[in-house]
Amino acid sequence: MGIQKDRVRFNVGGRVFETTATTLANSGRNSLFGAMFNENWDLQPNITTTEHFIDRNPDCFSVLLDLLRTGELYIPSNIPEKLLYREALFYGLLDHVRTAKWGPFDGNRLHLARSITGRAPGDGTAIRAGPDGGCCVAHGSMVHVYDWMLEEHPPITLDYQRVNDAIWVDSESIVISACERLGRDDGGMGLFSSSTGELRYKFHVSHENLVKSYTGGALSFNSDYKLFSSCKGRSNEYGVGVWDQVTGKQIDFFYEPQGWSLGDADKLQWLNGTNCLLVATLFPRKDNCYISLLDFRDKSMAWSWSDIGAPIADERRVRDAIAMEETNSICVVNEYEDLGFMDLRSNNGIVRWSSRSRLMKGKMPDEPCYPKLALHGGQLFSSMNDSVSVFCGPDWVLTSRLRNSHGGSICDFSIGGDRLFALHSDENVFDIWETRPLSII
Image 1 (cartoon, rainbow, N blue to C red):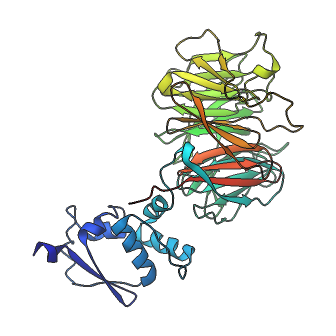
Image 2 (cartoon, rainbow, N blue to C red):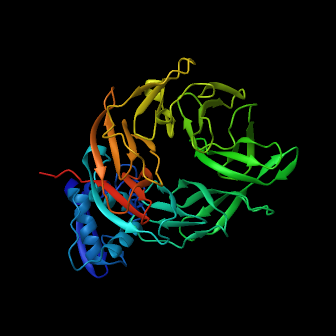
Image 3 (cartoon, rainbow, N blue to C red):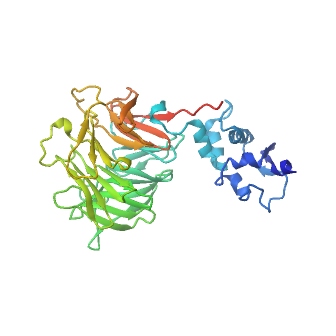
């Protein structure tokens, strides 16, 4: 009788399928099937029929049912992938399909899955990975959005305002910061729909009870739904603003200390363990580099570093920085992909440089793409010319290099949704790197 109780029958588009509650439990609580069962994966009391009719595509249902049974995804040639993804979305199984298509992210096992040519050759400035495997690419005053199937959505147009940064709040929402146009109060930041490109609301800066025009810069957010942005205004509202990303209301502002440079920050990064915000203003945007940790609880600068007054050769100029909480350090990189490390437990200003990652030291291209850094899953990534290097272990040893020479140098890259996206500058091509799923034996 237990086996009979476990059986479930579906009629999908006229075809009958029989499976078990055990198999359907693999779909998870957030799926359509999860809503049909109680917490013990027994059919809900109000479901008394012996056959459950679903007016959907039976061929796709068969593929998805086999996915729940085996964990493997096989798509017959007669089923368009787009149709299967649409059906997976209906059943709440997109995460299962994505997991079957590529494995958990591992920088040393990535392979080039696809390259896509952008819409505006030569002016791609930034690429940002979405949480579900999609991405957005900023081109001047436009942001092109791609879902996880890499189908393009309606672009986001900022009416001739140059995009400075973008960040995915969730898979349906993107915050974009932009420059204020001369004589116009239309800069700042806005939250947009990733699927329609519609502006949902703008983030305002208030100073002395007045709404001020400003240029929005680098962006970051934390798990408490707070959004951070560097701000450069016309008056004295220079610094880092804080907003509630759900309501769009300003809730705090860290004003720029004298002699520092927060309003021109290139990078913001929230540190969960210390409740601090990394703010980095880097060369060549400014003649000097400024890196600090801001503690918003008492409006203090918990840690800071600058190369002001230090005799620094051009090859030691910091191009990017990233905080590494597990090792209490900040990693920086120069234009030759030398890595440097600073101890957050001291303020002595010493950078321990290592050149073991360098392949060659020579003349930079006429229009260089400066290195960028990223940290993901305990691995450190650094872009250099047309490749991305992967570093692992306590000594950050170079373990692999991702390279696609088509499109020229990499001007930006981003990791999210178990994918790495790399944007090339010359031909505005972006690459999608994925980890192949492990074979099931």
